[in-house]
Length: 255
Length: 62
Image (cartoon, rainbow over all chains, first blue to last red; front, side):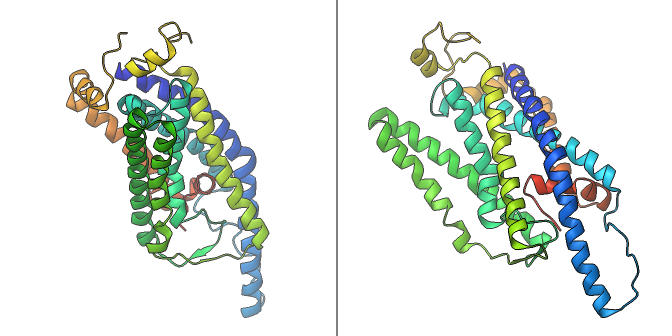
């Protein structure tokens, strides 16, 4: 049974990954390259101001060529979706299915929301995606544990919210349960108040930086919607008693 | 399939009978290594090659 769940999760990841890989290929690759070029142009101008006759500096500070970066980034985007599919929609769905609110496809979308909050949403409250080339005041050594800590906080928030919903929807009805489920997210939203601030200073025009950040947020949201939609198609026939009772035996395994 | 296991606790019990500890450890190690490689590995060769992807995923290290 575990293998069946893992397979459907990885399948959802493979399908969503094709689209996300395409997103990296047609949107992220050219835009990040352009942003790096704009940054480089700004830096070069500074260099000329300090020491004239600097000449044509190395086009790219990267350790690898642009072609390799493009190809590896597309492959990474695909692997990223496969990883999320396997971990969240494979193993995660196997263990948590009975506790996820809703029935049928709704469960896939609720899990996708929880996955987004855990992997990206909660960490972004403290460390929002930054435009290429921006300087950040916190060091990498300080940001990695902060990012990981916010992932844990996001996961706990979602588990607590789901637990509250399950307990109250059985006794008090759906509306009070939904209100209680929102409380942990309200607490999570207070995290930026206590977390250390990360001042971001970028050389890019503000509008371009904001556009890039918005595009990358949109890209992750798109990825999770795709994962949920694909998983709703591939999900194994439920063995969860509540869902069976709610949808009727005919509906189960109809897909 | 019959509607037998309907709590999270049952799923964990079921996983314990279904999977050997070695299988479970292998699955966790595989997922962890892939996640670590994609997001956190700091070797310049790997890190720079995934530069565009990491921006697209909203995880930035520079």
